[in-house]
Length: 85
Image (tube, rainbow, N blue to C red; front, side, top):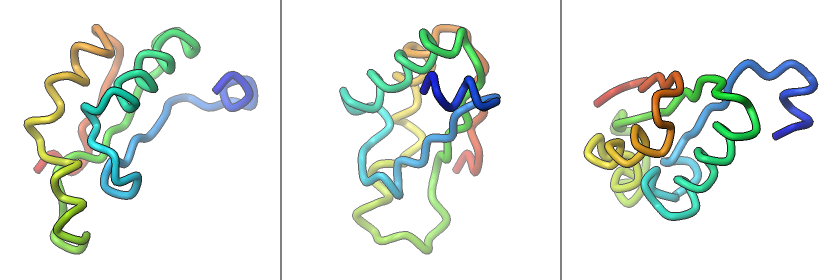
């Protein structure tokens, strides 16, 4: 993360469907908290919801209900919900 920020990153994108890891999993929330700490609160773009082209099993990882925990993890840092179901 530090290397990306040093190179000019202005935010981070999280795509739970492709990662096959729900955005509210222990590991995903730890990643978001670490990003907030390391980046000083740079924005996070979250691919939320699903578009119907992904495998059915991937949809579970991106259900909009899972994003409540994200808001708590980022504690006021900028967050954009792309494709918000």
